[in-house]
Length: 256
Image 1: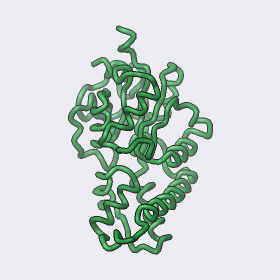
Image 2: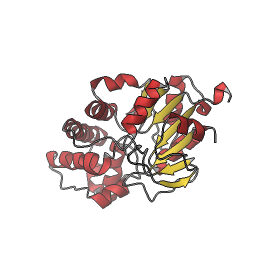
Image 3: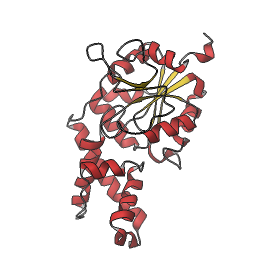
Image 4: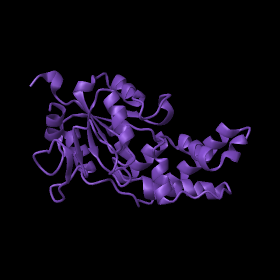
């Protein structure tokens, strides 16, 4: 196998990929922030699933206002107010993470450990904020885990969020690597579109909100990364040779 075709980095999405944070994490934090701001908004499970079609928390708030509370758009300080509301939501989310109530998805901790042993570079490419990334990693993998990742691309570091490929282009540039040396792991259609637009081979592990989305173009679609004692379910695409994803599986998928 050519050296240039050997897997050198794995690029992880965060929400829904590392942990199923949306329904009982971000959604609850948004609702807590709304209450603190004396808003009568409530994002129930079904509504939040619809709102997830918009990536980025501040963008999601604005979209909700445009659709359900247009009168509130007349605020003269709208952008600053949305940013303040979102900052408050982030504090509630961090508190939820610190409580340890949201674990990593099956296979995530094992795979990260294996990749580190293989000296494969780790990166994050997400639309969520750096504060959210830090809170999740510290609460699940420990204080030192931030340093395990060679590059973390998060939040507003690029102008356009997924499904635009900007965050992946930025991460690849920071890594100094080509797409052909990397594989992306995502859970959503928007994430897949972003990764494919950056020419990255992409593995999908579906989450609660995304299992019915369109994953055409993914190299493989799995229920999760799997464990030797808890194999994944193969949904679509290439079927890995075993029931849990490791370095060798990722390298094979990248060179499919």
